[in-house]
Length: 304
Image (cartoon, rainbow, N blue to C red; front, side, top):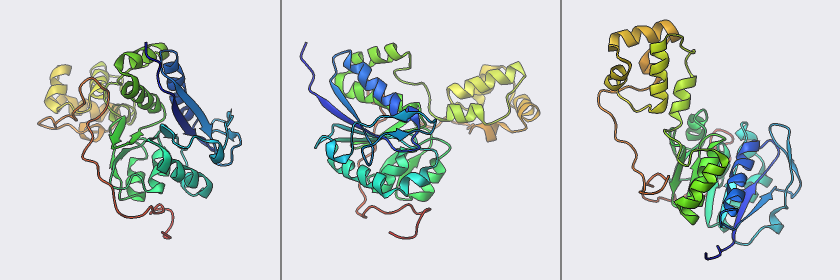
């Protein structure tokens, strides 16, 4: 078996970062090393010191900007729920901007997309973040083409992922890209996770938004919607064995909401996103880069 080429991975860490945003991808890469990969994972903080995560757990940093590889293979930028504090930190955004320029592949987890957007690298690109933050990302950085549903999105050499645990999905897709589906599948089996998570983020937002239903028919319907939010109203009622009128009454009585406010049923099913055969990756749109220089968050400061 041919020995893999070393692949430097830099994961940025900072005070208030979400723990799983950092440790999820790190665990995937280190597990891949047990199956022939050679990822060299380094945790970097703006000043090279340890950081305290949002859960209070401390993470040891391997160093600061001066100790990092000249050309990282992969950059992972995690996030924090209070993203405004992250993008307002010049030491953090400066470090990330420098690593974006030097890295072959740039990625983010959850609210890390805001930090990437602050550097300008997402201008003109498709991107995703946690479903609760998608509207905020679109408002703060209008040049970013924000999508709310995908678990991760690739546009050129930049890959952004959704909320928290989707960093594991992201890292698995990178392992698959680097070493093929067999290695990625072994890593997924080792970590007891989906190699390709079924559905998008809306399966979680749709299932968790309304009050929990007690009626068995409605519970079945909510599970069906959660598994595939793109189902049409006809398909859902057929699977549940009820009429559309009966379903609407159940929704109102059990959740206080209508079917349309829980998910977006349609008469005809919209086209599904296409996939690259043999991968877990979305087919990217044509790569587009904005000519404008990096700008500050539109919602945070009026100063360019």
